[in-house]
Length: 213
Image (cartoon, rainbow, N blue to C red; front, side):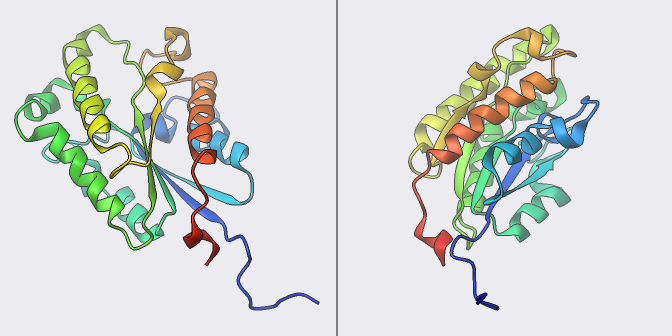
């Protein structure tokens, strides 16, 4: 006899993917199935629900040209009450106009920390998986990219095991230029490598008692 009205013993785990056009799936011919969140959904299966909150042009710097924390996608993340947040941002902070602000104190790192603190403070107490961003194969952006990655790494080292549950190294997972048809955005193969790396991070998380409530 079905247990009508009772909560399932294994509720669906809500996974929020926060990011920029790389998360959104910009440039993919079949974005709905080839963006990394869609591929991650396929890997994780029905016990998880993966939400794509990627936004083209989004940056971390609060004073930048499209700060993620000030966009409707971020409000949707907060309203979701996610169990897991996957964060992959930083590429658009390498735009010269953004990094001119970001390289000043408190700048990039402080904006990043504010985002992570806000997510960690949600009532659902989500696990935070934060990604080292993929390589950026645009020569004119290298002057900004290298210090951005350095500041990202410094923050991730400081907060891993504290604010951050796990660091996913997308930079290493996607280390071939052939994965980026336009030198910025991954093609379907690159998106699969991103999904594979994040999947490994998610399934290695310890079971949360809160998920069984």
